[in-house]
Image (tube, rainbow, N blue to C red):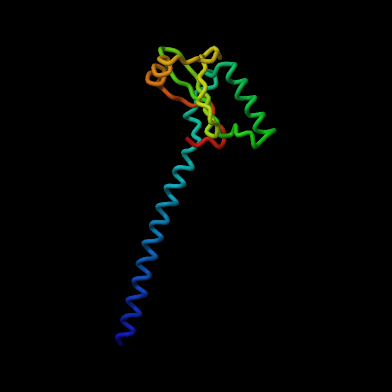
Length: 139
């Protein structure tokens, strides 16, 4: 009789543990699906009409390079738009590049930092918006 009671106890404990494990697994799957589904929201991108012509051409060239050379690393890149001193600035970021982000003015000229200008820009820029994200860009 005692052995039957111990066997029942073990089965019940195993059942309770498996239910707890299944609940945890369900939570992990739900959270994973949430992050994957939110990853590439096109609502974060600025409208095409607000992208300067020079940048559209550069993005188009990068997309062609990605197709012809999948190992180019351009799929880990993104373009952002910021506001700074009532103007738009665009930053190019590549996650696998050791170079810092390049910043361009709206007209396409590169924004050259001075020592003070860099700090002013970094602390004063606002309204970050995506212009374009490579398929593997994840930040």
